[in-house]
Amino acid sequence: MIVFLSGLSGVGKTTTARAFVTRQQQFKHIIASDLISGAGASIEPADEREVIRNQNILVQEFAGFRQYFRDYHLLLDGHMVIETSKGDYIIGDEVIDGLAVTHFVGIIDNPSRIHSTRRVAQKGAISFFELAKLQTLEMSVTRQQAERTRRPFFQVQSGQVESMEASLGLAHQAIENILQPPRPVWRLRRLL
Image (cartoon, rainbow, N blue to C red):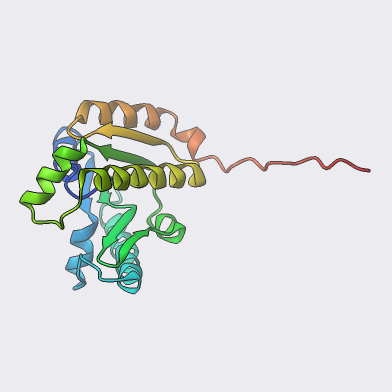
């Protein structure tokens, strides 16, 4: 099982993930930005070119971790929307496909709480309204990727480890159905 844990910087993904893997020791927690910075790239890309470079690094480095931890489930802590000084970039389908994600979990929180966390971490000034919009976009893109890949999506409040466990437990029971190839959709054309 490869779970993509998405959410804004400062939402509590890493804190939630660490609590989760403490309780669920069959999982390994991997932070996307650690893989990228470990390969020598900046985790604060300036533009689209750097975002693409970083995502290529992530896919390559994560493939190595999948091999190394093949006896474990993986919890990849990352973003679907990358914030840069030149705008926000949505991660492409090829990245999600390259990561071989089987489940998506979106972590959300109150924008005022995220704002406080980001201010302490000195992560760019952004209004509550903008944070709320960005969080909605992050969850929307995560949900769209789940639908596109026909994988389960769960939205969990930051820190709610039990909810995350319950969601993934239900998903794990249904994994045989999820991993079946999609059925073709036939459209009937009316003959004139």
